Amino acid sequence: MPSITRRDALGATATGLAALALPRLAFSADDRSAVYAEIERRHDEALKRLQEWIRHPSIAAENRASEEGCELMMQLAREAGFQHADRVPTDGKPGVYATLDAGAKRTVGLYFMYDVKQADPSEWSSPPFEARLVDKPGFGKVVVGRGAVNQKGPEAACLAALHAIRGAGRKLPVNLVLVAEGEEEIGSPHFHQVVRRPDVAAALAKTIGVFMPSASQDPDGTVAVTLGAKGVVEVELVASGEKWGRGPSKDVHSANRARLDSPAFHLVQALATLVTKDGDPAIEGFATAAKGPTPAQSAMLDEAARRMDEATAKKVLGATRWAHDASWRQSLEELCFRPTVNIEGLVGGYTGPGGKTVLPHRAVAKLDLRLVPDMTYDGALAALKAHLAKHGFGDLEVNATGGYSPTETSADAAVIRAEMAVYKRAGIDPLLWPRNAGSYPGYVFTDPPLTLGTAHFGLGHGSGAHAPDEYFVIESTNPKVSGFDGAVRSFVDYLHELAVVA
Image (cartoon, rainbow, N blue to C red; front, side, top):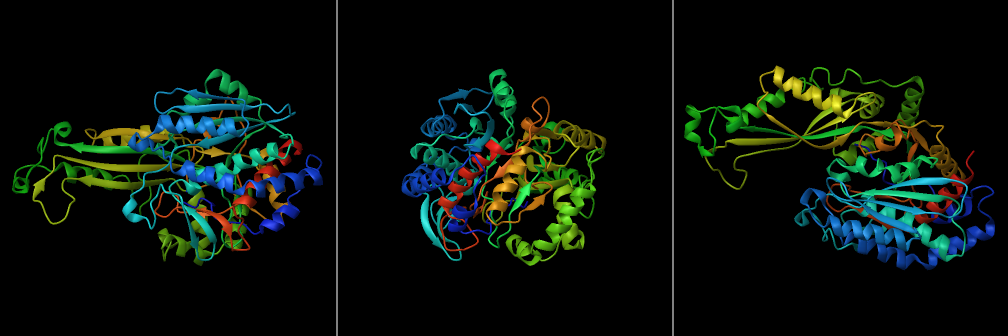
């Protein structure tokens, strides 16, 4: 959930949100005042909860503290009012299934992740798991830490909304079904085992849709409502002398390159066949099923190109030109609709200071392949394997480590219409965005048998997902960005809107 991830900021002050974001009928003025006052009263408590969560990282890629992360996720759910919170075993890290029965007419699904990406402390201005509060010019006071915006900050704001509603003596307007995982950051390889457990699937089938808490505001006041996400295949390609039958079976002196083949160059040559000279996918059959934009989606992109600032986007990315020297409008279309083959990392032999004249026997490339409708995870992985075999690289190990198919949700879905209504009542004119160029495992909800609409909702701003100095705004000095309390209020408003959306 970072790719443009729309996790930055939106155009409404905290006061404006309190005054404008009024769901119809289900949320009286007295209820609103009481709950909003409770949010302010509980600010320190909610902030402390978020900081403690950041200080207890669960990192699936490092097999770090997943059981503890699962236990903490269940504890947080119970404290927020969920009557039942169960550990769901999988073939990997455990998931969580929790239910909150408010006696309401409607039920809504919630998707959480409790894992975070790795972090190298040497790259951070403050320790990544200290959750330090710092002043950030142009934004105000922010909490810095791994998971601050992806996704513990928004998730903590959503939980704080439940605490405030209950603390104010008011009734939650919808029932909730929560599913959470601890492997999102490694491609959610086992999350389907959580969602497809019979009792979990039955509970989700009764919902009107599922949403993931997010921080949707951009610093310039723009907010986008996303209607899906790209899929992803995360995979390692391994070249070795042992498997190839050529080159050394152990690292040897590089003088032997004169008489031995190089597994590292073998891998590089294989990688070169995966893309054209312009960097587009060249894997036979990989993108055959890819769909271009519909007329309605093209209109969304036209509007986005008009309203979004190209210079700001380039500055954020540290870029001066788009691939293929594309126009701003074309770059947005490619971001949403172009499948990609990317090298995340390439490692072989010695990479330390100075030189070490070695001929490595093994080299590894970590790739991610991004997918668009109607591509599938299984189809993309099969195409990659067939391509390598056809081009003489069938000896490479292809180790799929995670991933899933893309998602799509209609703009008419209840969870999307409710989102649009809350933003518009807050004086915000949101963009409809065809899909997030990043990925999340929403396919388990949008695909059969559930076939549910999904949304990413929430005011507030943060940035730096997967990068050093990740942050989430707590006390905003930017009039176009909500602070933590404003984010909490937005979830109160959204839950009430979900109760009445037609």
